[in-house]
Amino acid sequence: MNWNFSTPNFSLRLPDANQDGDALYELLSQPDVMAHIPKASMSVSAQSLDELRRVAMRFEVRESACWMVEGAFDKQLIARVGIQKINWMTESAQFWWELSDKVDFSVLAEVIPAVMNFCFDELQLNRLEMRLVKDSPLHEDYLKQIGFQLEGCLPAQQEFEEQPVDLNLYSFLMKDRKL
Image 1: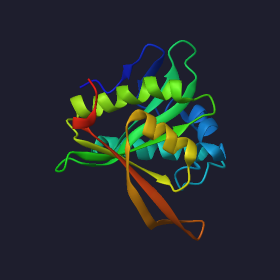
Image 2: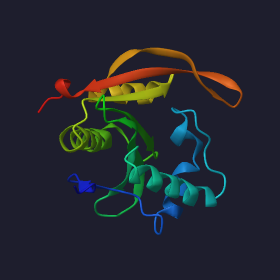
Image 3: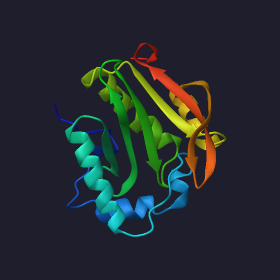
């Protein structure tokens, strides 16, 4: 199975620890990139190499997969998207994204359906869900436009910086996609 694929304007590929450290650090050192998921931004470049190694290990055991999203022509990293907590028994996974300020809905409208199609067609998943920090209006709007449905709020689902974090749970089922 080829895990790398493309859309007309973007390439989506598995990360490479030997070449992606600097670009990943540049993306994940921006606090706004991860404000919708309770996760601290990177503060030193060595963290990106650790992250790339963790991602590779989790991919090897098929617990998760992530793709670096680059412009097809300029090869600049603009986002990282992925699935984690893959449950092969229930055919479900948690979807996530980390978006640079270069990403707007037109980019997502091209990239995210390609990722979802890969998850449904190649991986045979039935359900994708995404958890967002409650009151993340831009990301919630993106999800709704793509077709995700709000299932509800998970109160105090996580703790971040010694504070409880409420997460909104969105889902998309394979049967709901438009072919």
